[in-house]
Image 1 (cartoon, helix red, strand yellow):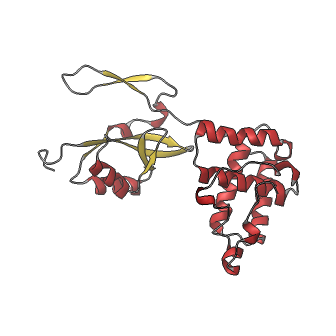
Image 2 (image 1 turned 135 degrees about the horizontal axis):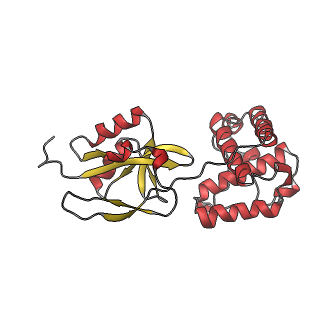
Image 3 (image 1 turned 90 degrees about the horizontal axis):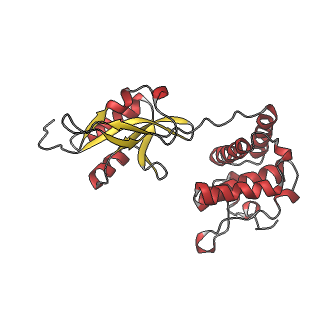
Length: 245
C-alpha cells in the first residue's frame, strides 16, 4: 500500500456494547472514513463516540476490505487482552511516536454485564412469548417485545415482575428518557412491551393504565406495523393503543 496515497489511520480496539464484545473503530471525523465504516457494516455509538461491529473474523475482514486504499488499519488495540483493559474513568499512557512524549488518554470503558434473570422472570418471558405467538405477532415484533421486557426485568433484578409497582415503571421510563436518552421510537417500544406484559399476559390492566407514551411525529399513533394480524386484515384497530386504556 502506497504511504503517499494512504495517510489516514483508523484504530481498532476491544469494545463492549450492550454487554456484547465488539470491535471498536476509532477514527477522526472524515467523510471518506465514515463512508468506509458504514460500508463495513459498522454502527455508530453516540455514547462512546466510535463505530463498532461484532467481534467476529468476518467483521474484521469486512473492515480491512472497506478501508483498503482509504486508510491504514491499526490493530494494536485488538492484540491486547480484553480482560486486561482498565475499567472505570481512568487514563492510560499512549505513545504517539518514537520521539514524542506519551499522552494521557481516557481508557476504554467496559459495560458491566447485566444481571441474570431469575426463574420467575424467565417463566414470565416464556409466557409472554406464547401469548404473542398465539396473537400472531410477527417474529420481529416478538423479539422486540421480549428484548425490551428482558431489559426491563434486568433493571429490577431484585424484584419479581408482579412486585414492580406503577411508580417504578414510570421511574424506569424517566431513566431511559433522561439518562440513557434513548429515541422516542425505542421508548415507545418499551412502553408497548411493558404494557403488553402486564395487560395481556398478567391481566393487570390497572397497573399500566396511565403510563405515558413519547410524542410521535406528525400526530401518528402507536401501531405495530409488523403485526401479521394487522397486515392480513389491512387495518390497525387491535394494535392501536390509546394513551390511557
